[in-house]
Amino acid sequence: MKLRRPLLVFGSFALGILLIAVLAIISRINPHVTVRQIKNVHWVPFGMVMLLNFVLVLVSTEKWRAIDSAIRGLSDIPQNRTTSFALTSVGLAFGTFLPVQIAMSTARTLGTHGHGSALKRGTAGTIYEQSFDILTTSLLAVASAATWFLHGGIITWTLTAVSMMASALLMAGPAVRLVHWIAGFFATHIPSSESRIGSALQNLRQLLQSGLLGVSLARRLVLLSCARFAVIVLMSISTAEAIGLHIPFWKMAAAIPFVAISSLIALTPGGLGVNEMTSVAALHLFGSSLVVSGQWALANRVLITISYLFVAICAAGALRIKNLTESRNSNGVSS
Image 1 (spheres, rainbow, N blue to C red):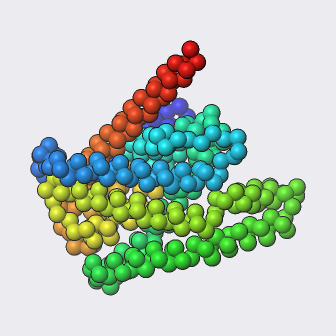
Image 2: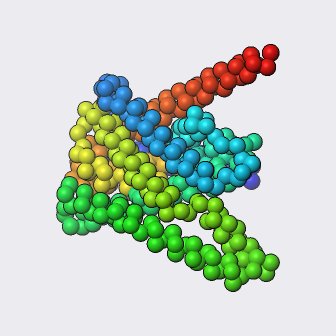
Image 3: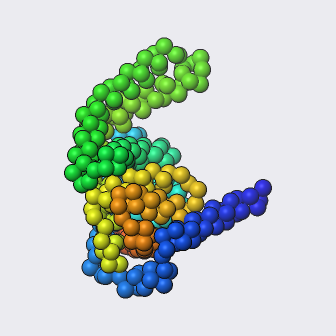
């Protein structure tokens, strides 16, 4: 039993490396060329990756804060923006080595510990927040699949994607009201004292009444998830430009939803190999060559990891400075 967990970790990492090797063979990538591309990275587009990464963390932070304000209790201490940003950036950085769902939930739960309802705010809040990302990418994956099936291009994908997002916003209200009605109906007809199901439904009803599943909040989270998706696409375009490759915007946007869905399958640390294989397959479906797609996928892994770690270190440093400054100010006042 003691060796089982280390063996699983080693096995998943080895699987990721194997998938990378298979990808290099299938795409006929010259490793030396890819290493040279990364070493000779263009700093302007790479700087854009850093800036967009900051925006990505900011959007994800605002999503979590919107949920946290709805679910935290009266006695819970709110997290300030600097702390929330730092926790999100650290979770995103750890997500390059661990499943991002686990990494983000762990970082926020530990960061909320001592401020009240850590599991509810850190873990449940993160799961609820990321469920909207899953909803958005799933709908966009339908748009991408329809584009491929119809042999369409930028116009087909754009019209289909916009239609799917508009439908999500329009259906948010009826969907929320339906969930409220179902939870209320069963909570009323199944007393909490009779079964665990009844107790769970009563808790769900109380959670819904807290405002967590409000129409305005649901629509806001959908819009923020759309913004997050757009930022990820722009980051992917920028990493391609950073190593001197050109991949059309719509092709990248059409491929990313499949990559996001594959990242939910936690077979390897941070989706190592799985994400790259999915990226190359999706881009190839929309007409990009295997060589270009493979070079971008490998370089993107390295550049995105560097940017995540850089932003996380900066955010943690800013939080540390802020806490020290506040501590000194409070000590000065008390003295």
